[in-house]
Image 1: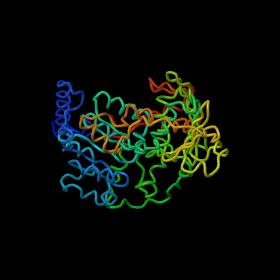
Image 2: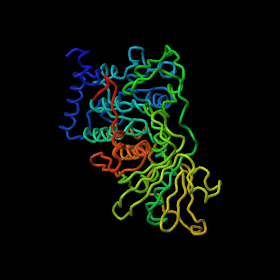
Image 3: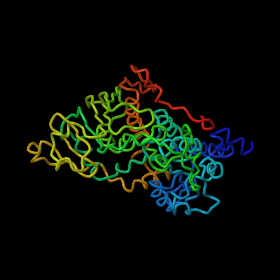
Image 4: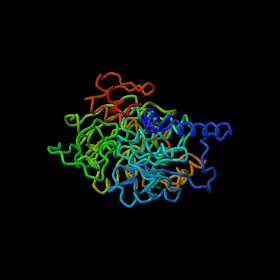
Length: 439
C-alpha cells in the first residue's frame, strides 16, 4: 500500500503499516496479560514517546510539560501562534498536518496530547486511539455527543490511559467539597445550581474577507468543519463562539464547573434535558443560557435536578457578594446547603453549622494533573479524569447546547444516543464532516 493510498484509508493520512504495528503491539500486551497497550515506556522510570498536537495557547503548557518525556514530534497549523514551542523538536519532526505526523511516527509513539480547537479534537483523538496510543485531550473532549461517546468507548475497548483537561479536578478544595457531600454533611442532595458569569458569545458577523496569514495553514485549521473564508474573529481564538468550531461558554466552562457535582454525586447520564435562552442563532453561541438536567436515583442517592447557567441565575439573589466570591456551585440538601467553588466552600445556613466538624480527609491528594496521566500511561492507576468518568460529563455539557439549539427539551435515551420528544434535537447529536474528513 502506498503512502498516498493509506491516507485515503484512515482520514487519508494514517498508514496501514502503522496501524498494523500498533495492533500487533496491543495484541502482544493483552497476550502477556497486562491489560494495557505494550509501550516503549514499560516501567515508571522510562520516558514516554509523546507527540503534541496544538502547541499554542493552552497547548503551550502541555508541550513544555511533555519535554520532560521524550517529545518525539509536534503538529500545529499556525507556526506563529505555536511560538517557541514550534522549535521544541527538529524541523523534520514538525508538522502542520497531524495526519502526516501519525503516518511518520505512529508506530514509535506511546501517547499523544491534543490541544486544538473543539472541532478538531475528535479526529486526532480517534486516530491516536485506533493506533493504541494513550491520549490527553482538552475539554470539552469533543465537538458533539456522538464523538464523546465514541472516544470514551474506544479508550475502554483498547484499555488506554486517558485524561480530560479538567485540571481543577486536582485542587485540594475540590476533594474537601466532595467529602462533605459524600459524608452526608448537608443530607441527601436533590438540587444543584452551577453557573458561569459573563456575557461572551454572539460575535459580530464578518463583512470582509482578509487574506489568510502566511504562517497559518487555514484549510487544515478548518479541518472537518464546513469551510468558510478566513477571518481573525474566529481564528485563532474567537472560534469558541461559532457553532461550527466551538461549543460556547457551556463547553468552555461546563466541564470545569459541573465536575464538582459530577464527582460529589456520582452522576453519569441525565434522563431529561431542557434549555432556555435568547433567540437561537444558527451560527453563533449565545451570550447567556440556562439548562436543567434531570438525573435518576443512584443507589441510595435520590434523583437530582442540576441547573447550569451561563449568566447570573436568580438563585444568587439570596446570597451576599461576600458569600458568592469565588463560588460557582450550590448544593441543596435536606439538612442545609453547600456553596462552593474551585478554591472555597461554605456550609449554610451558617448558624446551623456553627459547631460543625468536617470529616477527616478521605480522598487522597492526586498530585500533578498531567503527571497522573503520565503515570497511568506507564501502567499506574487511571488518571482522575479518565474518559469513563469525564466522557459522560462532557456529553452532558454538550447536551445542554443541543437542547438550546433545538429550541427546547427532550428525554434522553443515553444507551442509544437518541433524543425523544423534540424532532429538532437529534441532528445535533452527530454532525456531518467536510469532504475528505469522513469516517
